[in-house]
Length: 576
Ligand code: ARG
Image (cartoon, rainbow, N blue to C red):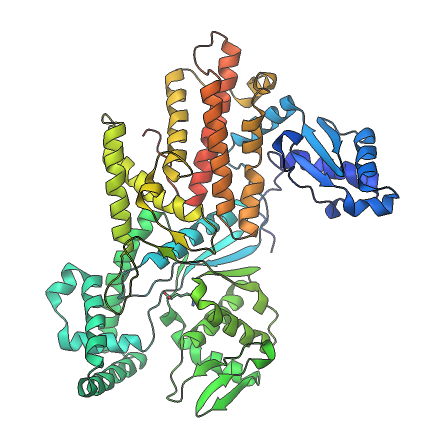
């Protein structure tokens, strides 16, 4: 679906040179430009782009090295020189042209923006009410929110959805537990803590045979009352528990800069469940299994069938996901619907997608489970059932406390230590999560996460703040890129290459659903920036034009860091 409000975005940064290189190659090789993929030379000194010639050699009637040599000698591309190194053809951008292009782009708000316009649904966070948000939800929230911002930056029409876990038989248990042991005062004081306590108590008592049986009956009755849809005591309590939980979640969302367009918990699909089951039945894929309704998935290579309805007639997690997917498709006809959910739920997503495939929908493969690995904390293994949860809010508080100590030590004169400690602490946790491969386990080491040196969020925040401080001290306006002679900046190609690769990093991070690609590029930008202001004197050179040019470079660096950190959800304080 094209988005009429998005203008066509011209390529930015290094991408601006990739297009003419590919066009020239396409003409020389008599191929379509789309079939030519440029790579990055392994050795940065060899240039910015490389073309391995193996694939094209045969058709050209030469061996790869001959072809590379021939192309290097004959290609003429403005502002780009080509050189053959064995079977590789390397391209280097003229240093002044590089500085001019990247300086012009990197200073802009829409650096790396594209005009994609597709509808992308991003479902993320999705915690369960009446339970604390734990560190698994941290990854979903942080990764999902970052991905949503990336797609948004690339021009997609993004719809952010929170699929709150607010329905299911476990709420019958909670209601039963509340009726027995609930304490109004405790609920007021610490809503989620008290509800968690009830949950734990229930599972304790359930083990006792006699108690267990009566508890179970009470829980079933309570859920039945809730499911009836009537305005009864059960429903009023459930609404209250939901609201109390949401208020707690919102505090965390505010700190993580996570927002949602649609807050649609599982309960939202309650009145769509019957029609979803009817639809599945009418597709002819549902069969009986001891009174339960299931969809067999052998034909899709999945051993475990998908349970749609139990023999008691209750629907399940999968039924609600089927209803949600169908309703989202009817409403949005999305190009993709992404689910940021831990890798332990892989089977669940495989199953309900396979059901939709068997139903013959045209859109089942637009649903994409984007899994991630666990975070491991030094505090050890945690379990909700036993009530041993490391709450997300505690993790953030701890990080902020540590950040506060560091700020106190590094900059005792800072005018607003509380704000900056919050920005650094929370930013450190977010960046740490996003700088690691999504699908790997992340080990959390407090010292490392908050370090001001190395590949951390605080080190990038610090580079950004350093740029701001240089610009403050300059006490003059930063010249606009068009006022700068780019030849004065041609001696810092590392900085321009690092900044110039920002647009490609944003795009690749979105394509691969891998925010790490952007995080790692920002670290490269940070390193190049540090080298730049360490080695090149910015202020007080006595040469006004040179000072202006270097200030413009610092400004482009500052803006790109702020933009990139912002896309990841990491705040960028101007003073640290
Ligand atoms: N509430 C679930 C949990 O905390 C996650 C929901 C994931 N999303 C989905 N559409 N099933 O484990």
